[in-house]
Length: 433
Image (cartoon, rainbow, N blue to C red; front, side):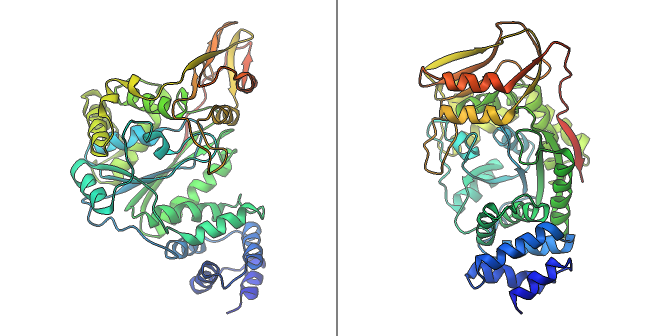
């Protein structure tokens, strides 16, 4: 088999066999096939697409290029949740204990953030003492006992995907549905999940800006999951404005606590209930998605979800008293208001700009080596559709430096105010089964 022949075959729109895809992935992982040939191969896929079968074979080849996590010692059906990313997305912190509270095992491997704000691991580390450094035996024991544990991503998962992603980034082939879908799904499958729930974001703060593209990606990932024997569902949710009202690590932990207390913003609650219902249903803990939702609403109302969060934090050496006393979380030294310059209704908030503003405060990483300030961030006092009077506070900046004029200007430019009434945006556009 020769790489040049496979490039030509895909360039001309023909379907590759399992053996041919394995030849490419294995050869590239080992260093036997050079970057320039895989670049040409990725560009051929970009223009010619891949069949569902090819996408599944590419995904599995990347899974088998490295370690695979064995979760068989954990009792029950393990359901993983993945978000394609957004601004203020603290869903996992609220969703994991919510789902665990009805008996669904959540064995979660999460990463650190690069860009807008911290990843789930960074946010959890805003809790004093919280540790994600637990070994496999302890991880398994915690999930079996408490139905929940979260650890940092380990070593050598999907090395083929890491190499291919880095190459795509510099060859203008990132935005390819089969390559994106197989990249995401390879990591989920290698992580050992029995079933997978996907939150595909769409809008100005999302990787996929257009709804039709987001739907195509969601359908592609669900098809890959199902063809590889994993029950898979997806939703398409809005990211034309930040999720909830906070951006920044300790601020987002507070908001997740509020949500589990039955308070907090409606969009975060609704997203958690929608994703959680799918997770509970796929774990076979409920006969329907509707019944699953009722179970989740009940554990918020009776306090079991909040209690599960406390047990989760304490079991990973964190200070669980922050649940009842969130003022113990890291707090910034200064609060600065960004005020409205006119009256009307908020018509748009550029989510990307809000995320960048939070990063400039120190809530996210500009580079992999950047140090995150867990205390800083942004609280949105007005969101799309909200009425505004001249001088109202649009945003409260939580900062550890007084001079944040550049951040104030960026936030002001992210807001648009209309004289006419504005409808609140749709949160969930579609569900893919």
